[in-house]
Length: 64
Image (tube, rainbow, N blue to C red):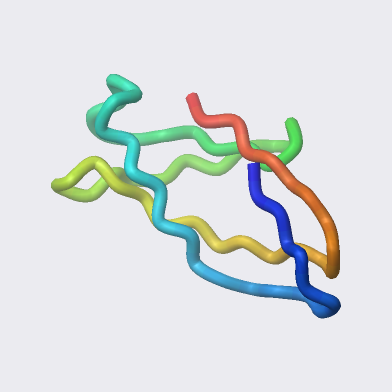
């Protein structure tokens, strides 16, 4: 879950540590249940996803 408390839109690369998820090669990540995208995990089991969130908004991600 991601929250933007600012009065403006924010665009960032968000690094997600997925070591304890049990995923080893790829992760299917969906924002708010929309169509997912497959990301390749790096050697430390992390992925970087682009996040764009409006002012004072909330969004969430499902990782499989």
